[in-house]
Length: 149
Length: 425
Image 1 (spheres, rainbow over the protein chains, first blue to last red):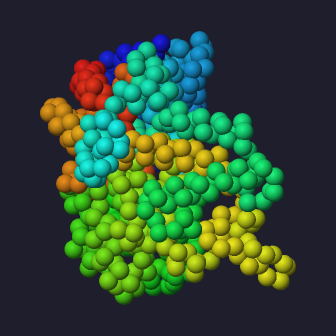
Image 2 (cartoon, rainbow over the protein chains, first blue to last red):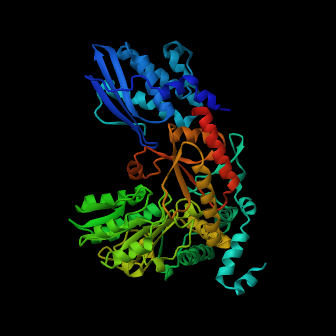
């Protein structure tokens, strides 16, 4: 049976209470807005690229503990990553939260593995992936606001 | 005490007796789903404003219809078609009496309250709203009573005007009266707010609008399950409600319209059953209400709705209202005492639903933890985003009550909220 403690792990609750990189970048090279129309969560992601490398990334928005923690830990994981590495990390993260276990993803995911419990709570997958979908739009310059629907 | 004895003493006595005899444990046994376990805990179903559960009587009536009576209506000369038609039309009369309409020809079967409103915007709206005209709604409407009017106003270059609400979640009635202008073509207002539980003073609203010859549609989706409805007393021009919110099946609902309005409205959809004769040159539409019921309708749904209305009548809508009123007061009282909880929607007249937010904790997280405790509530914007914006919040938790809920279930909700604080606080 799915356990709440798998979902609301200490690290997740700590990030939800005090999210990192919760700010707006002064001179972003990419920004995007995302929303989950079903629950009203909103997220905006700013990135600053130097060449192919993500130099800085920040987010703002309102949402549940899972969406805030996921956005916060995403920004920490991405700094210094290349565009290609960021895309690969997104795919691994997505596989993990949708329950497609893949041992090869584990080392790449690092601290993000705390979100593994979400696969037991299908209604919360969108909370965890909202920031990531928004990031994709910011990285790839999509102009349309992102929605999880 | 037998019903006959009670009846001889007049309506007041029936009222009190029926509330005393409201045996909720017995009622619960009529709803098979209430014995489900959710994550190993007995189900506490507090999402009745989204949809209600179905009693055996409704499930069995639909089952019986398909097993014994199924045929198309208004067409065949064979016995089954006659049985299906009789069953279908008997529900129209039951629905008429349920909302106290003057005539059963004023009852149009639709998919639900949403389709009822869309029917009015497509027919009455298109024929009567033009460029520069205005449609008046309130700030507490469900999306289904906003978007169809927006579509109409966009198409006709008309303006949608919105009556604001106060911090308790009540319509500002003086502002409403001021907004009734020479270009207002129709008013459309919820009888009860789905997000806040507010009961609107619709009789007063209708009177004010009628003094300027403006018709009024009342969205009764959240009222019909909780209070007696009398469309003649309200004097509203249209009334919409959904079967699935009064213990009936999904996919069936009712639009009531005053006969003189329905008569003059163009049809909604074209097809079979809504015509009296068709040639390639000209079609003559059928009489009311069939003019608005094109195609083979949801016959089994109508049969289920009829069983639901009978079920509600057998308990008595006054007795149901008394029971739910007690639950709402109890829940309001218990939740008000929980540290960090703020109620959203504190109107003086409320039924059915209790919305709240919790300091620092997002409704979505509350919903997940309550679900693990077996408690079903709605979290989110409740298809009423403008209401959320009005209160400056992204979402609420909504506990909404039905005739089978108990105080013990509200205690479980409060315990569940304590658990939320334990985990996330």
